[in-house]
Length: 305
Ligand code: NDP
Image (tube, rainbow, N blue to C red; front, side, top):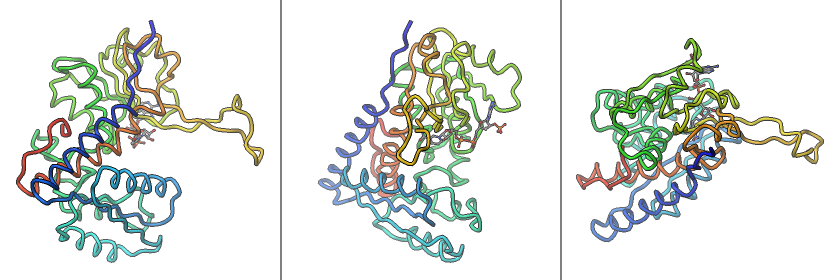
C-alpha cells in the first residue's frame, strides 16, 4: 500500500484564495482592509526569512502589512510600548511577535501584552483559556492548519482515535484541544510516555510534533492511519554531495520516517510541503477573522476552527 499525499502547498493556496476573496469583499462592502503587524527583535536569520515570507504573502492577499524591526538590544519597556501602540491602532487587526525573542526579554510577558482579539498567533493566555474551555478563541496557526487538512481528508472526526506526539504550548497542546473539540478520543504522548510505539499504532489520526528527525518509524503507524507530520528537522544528506565550502549538504525531514510510513499510512503530509505552508496561510486566515470579529461582521466560512 502507498499512502495518499496530503498536499499542504496546494491546500495553503486554496486558503490564501479564500482569504483574498474575503479581503476584497471587506473592501467593497465595508471599506475595511485587514492589517497584520509583525514585530521582529534582533537578526535571527531563520526569523528574518519567516518575517519576509509573511510580509510578502500578506500583501499578496490584499491585506496591509506593517513590519517593525527592532535591534537585538531593545528593552522590554520599548517593546511593550510598541505593542501598546499597535493594540490601539485601528488599522492593525493582527499582531505577531516573532519568537524566539532575545534572552533578556520575557516572552510570556510580551505575548500577554498583546490585545487578545489581535493575538493572531493564539498564544495569549486568554486565547489559550478560551480554546481549552471550548469558547471562541484565536487558534494557533500550525494546529489550525493541521485541523483543516484533517477535516478535508477525513470529513467528520467525531469518535476517531487521535494521538498527538508532543505537548508543547505552540503545537501539541492546542492540537489536542482542537481534536477534542471535534470529538476525537485524544491521547497526548511525550518524552515520558511508555510503550510509545504501541500508543501510536492505535491511532487513526497521528499528529507528530516532537522535533526529532524521523523518530516515528513505519511500524509505529496503524494500517490506513492519517499522519500529519509537523516536524521540521535539518539532517546531513551526504547523498546530495558537498556545498561550495566543502561541508556536507543538508535536507529537511519530518518527525516521521516518510519512506517507511507511506507503506502503512492511508494518507500523510510530506516534509517539506505539508504542514509548513499551512502555517502562514492560517496566520492570514486568523487576521481576516480578527478583522471581522472586531467589526462585528460574520466570520469567513472555512477559515476558522
Ligand atoms: P518542542 O520542543 O517545544 O516540544 C517537543 C515535544 O516533543 C515535547 O512535548 C517533548 O516532550 C516531545 N518529545 C521530545 N522528544 C521526544 C521523544 N523522544 N519521545 C516522545 N516525545 C518527545 O517543539 P514544538 O512543539 O515547538 O515543535 C515540534 C516540531 O514541530 C519541531 O520540529 C518544530 O520545528 C516543528 N514546528 C513546525 C511548524 C510548522 O509550521 N510546520 C511550526 C511549529 C513547530 P516533553 O514535553 O516530555 O519534553
